[in-house]
Length: 98
Image (cartoon, rainbow, N blue to C red):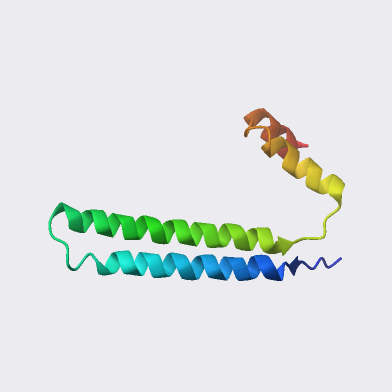
């Protein structure tokens, strides 16, 4: 049995836009590092790193939302429900052991 997924083109475009804006912002902040001295230099560098990391995370998050996997609703409910209860360890163990 081969299961093929599809992508929502609007969310893919949004993911690309998020990645472009995050990289532009991180590079702009990184450019300020050369002109800064002392503690300001580290602050600009940290801001650029956090912006780039957050942009990469956001881009991947939106891209994963864009992926549509044709699974039965029963299976999706069985997998999603225990984890949506606040990450209860007992529910995870019950899902994985049965």
